[in-house]
Image 1 (cartoon, protein in one colour):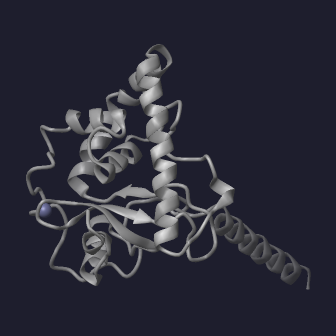
Image 2 (cartoon, helix red, strand yellow):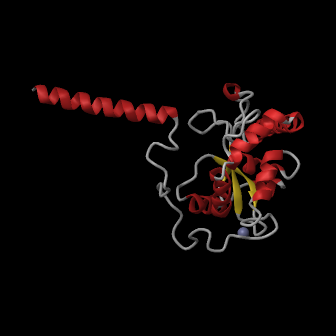
Image 3 (cartoon, protein in one colour):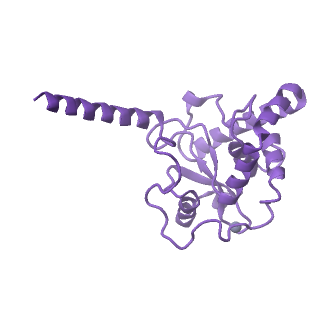
Length: 221
Ligand SMILES: [Zn+2]
């Protein structure tokens, strides 16, 4: 994509928030777009604005694609792929190449968007790469952003969802609520702890400890 297509507009950010049901943070580029122009993949910088290193660059946001990929996961595709990686040296090599590509592109995104090098996550990609498959959404996000021929297992997963979604058609109609205001708070179905960083979880726990300490000392008075 050209830089113009990569750069998220305010409308893109609102669409992402509607697609996910929560406000998006730290999205620096649109990794892939529908033929109609809507975002399919959000690109996050390798370091968040709060300073935390963030290895997962591409996040699949289009509800039709995320649901289709979840079906593949539920059907056990990740286990099959991980076994094939152990048995097929050629596939394993192409998957390692995809991992290297992911790292290279993430460095470039860090440079383009002003994050700079993030040594904390050097050599760490996402989705189970380079030797396993732990999240198909990550691999499909990578395939959509990179184009065909870069991530062999992301490409396979894309081919496997063609009954629900294909690159050449728009599936946006009715896929999310376009009329309501973009979410300003989290409306997703995530449980309360999902999506929190370790630091946020720790500060929540600390707040609970303080509250219970306060209750205890009050009780003693
Ligand atoms: Zn569309």
